[in-house]
Image 1 (cartoon, helix red, strand yellow):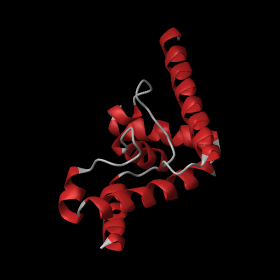
Image 2 (cartoon, rainbow, N blue to C red):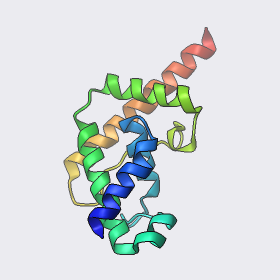
Image 3 (cartoon, rainbow, N blue to C red):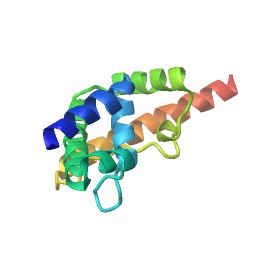
Image 4 (cartoon, rainbow, N blue to C red):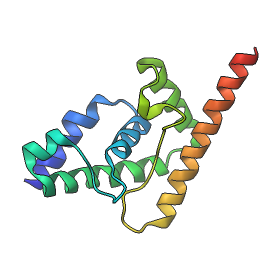
Amino acid sequence: MILKAAEDFKKRTLSALPTLVEKLAYICSLQTGSGGYLHWGFSRAYGNRPTQEAIYAAHMETSLALSHVPVREIFQEYQQAIAHSGVPEILNPNSFVLKAPVNGDAILSAHLRLLQDSVVALAQQESTTHQVA
C-alpha cells in the first residue's frame, strides 16, 4: 500500500508540476508545523500512515535533487514556473518555502533555507529592477 501511495503521489500529483522548485514548494505547502503532511484526498484514499510515508519519501527525494542544482538554474525554474502559471501562492516571494523533511538533517535544512532566501532575494531584486526601469 505504501509503495502504491508513493507511486501515485509522484505520478498523479507531482507530475502535474513541471519543475523541481514547484514540486518542492508544493510538498512544503503540505507540511505541518510538526513535520507531518496534510493531504485530504490522499489520506482518504490510502489512510494516514501510507500518506505520510509517501509524501515524506517524495519530499526527501525532491529535496535532495534540488540541493544538487545550482542557484542560477533554480531561479530559472522559478521564473519559468511563474511565467506559465502566474504567481500561485506557493511561489509568492512572501510565502515561498523550501524546507527539508523533518528528519534531523540540519545541513539539508540549512541548504534549502539558503536556496529559498536566494530565490526570494533574486525575485525581489528583479521586481525592483523592473519597477524602476
